[in-house]
Image (cartoon, rainbow, N blue to C red; front, side):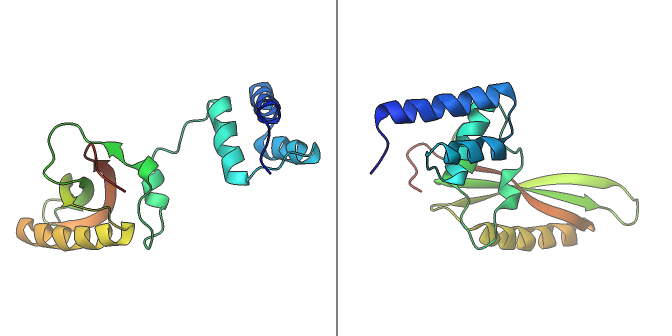
Amino acid sequence: MGLTTLEAYQRDTFIKSSAIAGVGANETLRQLRDSGFKMQRQTFLNTYREYAGIPKKENAIQYTPKKYYISESNHTLATGFISDNFRYTIRYDTINPSTGESFTRYTRILSSKPLRYGAILDEAELISGAAAYWNGEEVIQTKLHTAEYAEGAEF
């Protein structure tokens, strides 16, 4: 059985007042559970962070396991025209061994459906290897920079 509207209000008010007062998330969750309210930890943390004004991790995409899809919340609505439903921007940090110059390069992968993080990185490795070969550079780091979706795309 779920919470009544009053109980949900009381729970959220308690979380909000604790967050504003600077009480830690773990202590607030413990007090919440001791007072009889049940709440999943991740749901609680999302609510707590919202009230405490804690921003989302900036590079949350890079913490996605390779076998998982990138979550809908980590995708942003694409600006401008894209020819497919999903666009993934890859960042390559390279170095030219003969001159010692370092470069940052970007490329994009388009897809009609969302891709797993590992599949994006595999495709990025293929592209970076070819680009490095033709430019005479060594790839130092490859990472997913942004994940975007077209308006109306289905996850």
